[in-house]
Image (cartoon, rainbow, N blue to C red; front, side):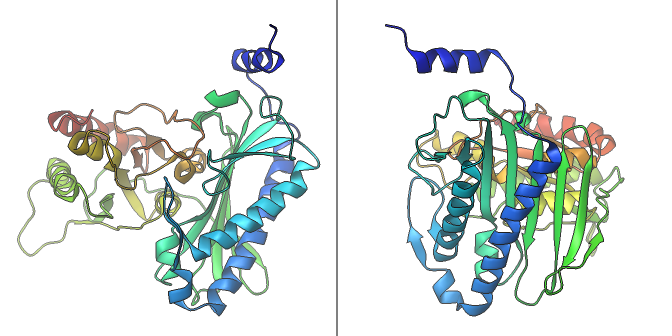
Length: 354
């Protein structure tokens, strides 16, 4: 029997689609979404006690959802319902369904939807809910190439800072594929914006700079620390008594880490937890790792001049979903990458991680 939906899906897989409308239109919509999310989250954050925001709302297959996350999911869904009246699309975001996908408008077919939008409404929940550090709203938009749509298909990306209660300014950064990246710093009260230069470090060494191997949570910490020490020794030599030659920054937000690369604060960041867990645990009961929604704005970093790849040096071609465990490496510039990446890969091979 002829299967119309299967035929449509096959056609989608055979050809690359284009985004409907202009990049400017998409950026305008994404900025409107982020403004709505940020406004509500900032107000909620300033009016709610830490104990209430950090209460566990849901323990699912993916990341833990806290009370602050649930409010963001509601706002995201309402916005997508409005946008879905204009054009059908697939939303990819944790917490919106068991599959991590939802098609707008209700009843639309995912095979004929015009684009896919992957969103992390609050990347850095843990730091924000304790008012320690900013979180980020992350969004990437790609033409709908079916289930095979991946991070490299993203053509428009935007990330917006959710500041702590003591901040009155926040940053917004965006990129369009092959058209560069841009940013602005906004006043939280007046809305006044000034241009923000995205200028990654041009250094070719870690010496006297920030370089980080992510090591946030229990599980695999000893092996990750061993790899970090080996890498730093390979780059700058043995630690010197009484000297601090390299600094690390455990920012529990992938979007925040990308920001640190883009604005020149950090020179190197990697997160290899999924590789470490796969080796130590054989893929069973793996602790929390990076997922594609955490890296959906890596286009901005690449367009700003950074190098963002898998630990083996290959492009990030992971699917737009909420379940794939990922590892990644970010270099501030291509010259630093040319020096560090081969050494890093050699160390990972030695530890049987790639």
